[in-house]
Image 1 (spheres, rainbow, N blue to C red):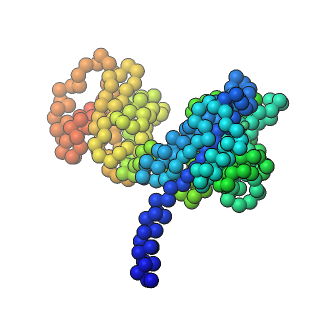
Image 2 (image 1 turned 120 degrees about the vertical axis):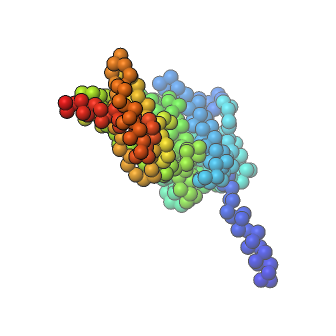
Image 3 (image 1 turned 45 degrees about the vertical axis):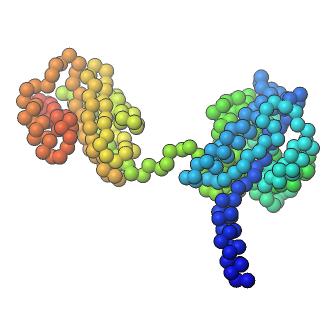
Length: 337
Ligand SMILES: [Zn+2]
């Protein structure tokens, strides 16, 4: 008997570890039923777009093993077709869904009505817990009026066997809300909010698939851009493959995150020849550099630079940077002269 139990446990553990959650996403309305209409938009189109984006995120999260969960996303409709309310619940029940998430947009005659709200059938329980997370994530994503977590005896909430929520994205009839509904970027944020909500509902740390892995092997570059007269204000310093910053009135700049290793910086400013330097960035350290810009048309650096550049290289820095230091020393002397 004990052996049998151990064998069962061995079989069950991997199954639990790779639990696949079946989520039915229900885009409201469709086909002959446009849902709410306002500000040149139809609810059925807006909610279908968010639904398809949410489905894509669930698939991407499943494929991306660096974080997140494992999902099967099913849709009550994937195109502009009419599906009855009974048909939506029946589909979810036939599929044996784990969760049912309906997506709608609100509409009202008074265009001042606005905000986000989410419904469940009961005020407490699994559905309400998911409802609260969808509402919180959406309010965070769109920063519109929080109309709160609500209960309603909607058919899709009542007749669906799985814990179910119905979300109202925003008011299609309100100009401020409609600006969110009409923006593909904002609709993607809404889809991400739904992803984060279902992840948190399953005690999975929120994870958006496809984001680059955290880069912790970085250092900081702090620098000064000068010309023969002193600090150069408004010079653009670009880290190859990274940030672009502009110097302040003191000619200084900081690039807070640069990957450890040899990095290339390009400094440019109006009226100056563009200068490229190499910097070796150490992990979790600050590298201080000075970049000297030469006015265009001034010509090549003086002859004695070569000797000084050789001296600069003995510090172990790159030859390019050594040249920069040599130039800096040269110009510093000239300023003092
Ligand atoms: Zn609706």
